[in-house]
Amino acid sequence: MQYALPSTRIPAQPTSGTTLEAKRPGRLYALDGLRLGAALMVVMYHYMARGGGWPTPVKAIFPDAFRISAYGYLGVQLFFVISGFVICMSAWDRPVKAFFVSRVVRLYPAYWFAVVATTVTVAVIPGGRRHLPWNDVLTNLTMLQQPLRVAHVDPVYWTLFTELRFYLIFALVAWWGLTYKRVLLFCCVWGAATLLVAKAPPGPLRLLLIPEYSWFFIAGMAFYLMYRFRPNLMLFGVVGISFCASLAPTIEEFKRLTFLGDRPAWPVTAVLAVFFGIMALIATGKLSGIKWKWLPIAGALTYPLYLLHQIIGWEVIGYFAPRGVDPWVLVGSLTAGMLVLSYLVHKIVEKPLSRYLKRGLTQL
Image 1 (cartoon, one colour):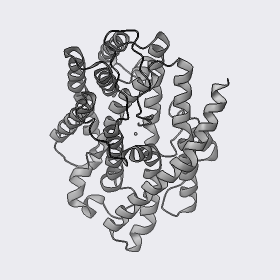
Image 2 (cartoon, helix red, strand yellow; image 1 turned 60 degrees about the vertical axis):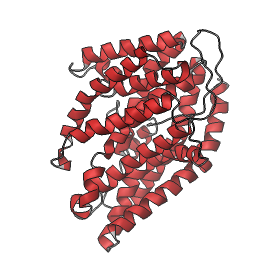
Image 3 (cartoon, one colour; image 1 turned 135 degrees about the vertical axis):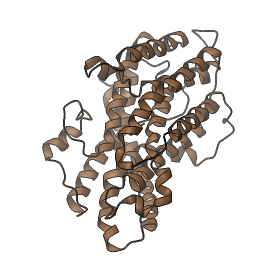
Image 4 (cartoon, one colour; image 1 turned 90 degrees about the vertical axis):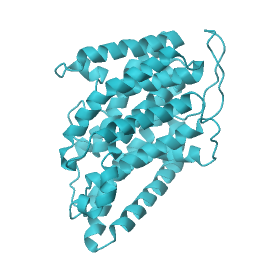
């Protein structure tokens, strides 16, 4: 799963180019907290619903928590909505090269560490998994293993290729120049193209347009236009259509998760409605009063936490669970440990390596 996401600090916004321009400086603290919430949803899904590493069926270990955690995978959809918002924000008034550099320095440092750390963990801890051949591990470092038909070091990396496809098509609009009308037009054209390829057989165009998740990115961009230029009926219409259109592929995905057993489908719609509702509150400034100082730190933990938690966590569970450690203590300790590890990765790996990469890439 945003989810490789940039900083949520709004760049300087000039008043030229359209009469709709509105300055809204400051950091989106609520968005930082929402990002961490999405990541923790995915963590709980992998630990208490999908259940890798446990010696017995996880549904029997966490019977009550399972019913909630089984919908935690929807945190990925929330990541995609947030990504549409933040990528649009971070690319505004920036040349394509700067946009490219910002994505590389944001995505790769923590990702490289996660690939290496996960591979080493699988090799060292006897948790039951076999690590990939070294040539496949090296391919994973490119983040292009999915189109190259190489297995992921960690299955959660599938969302990164989805993000990369969004960046690629959004870069075309950024190259044209981002304005209210152009981004709105892009949302409409992408939505129309999604309808045309949604039921088409697999192919390059369908792969590029991401019909399974495009509506979430479109909604995120519309939310950002609300935030930057103030809400209007057209933007609410784009968001409403995106919400309704996203239900079909999301319910289809829900039905494919048969290993979770029989579950009602209505919570999928309810959870997505909550996501869109919170994003609407952020986009319309209703949550601008939230300025808790710990939220930016929480947001910074999100990407490393997402990259590190699944396979490493399953290996730890596979080692300690058969030794009689209480399941709740194990999940709680493991989640806390992952948060601490994510903070260390952010401070020790992400920040210094990102600065080094940025210096090198901007000189090209």
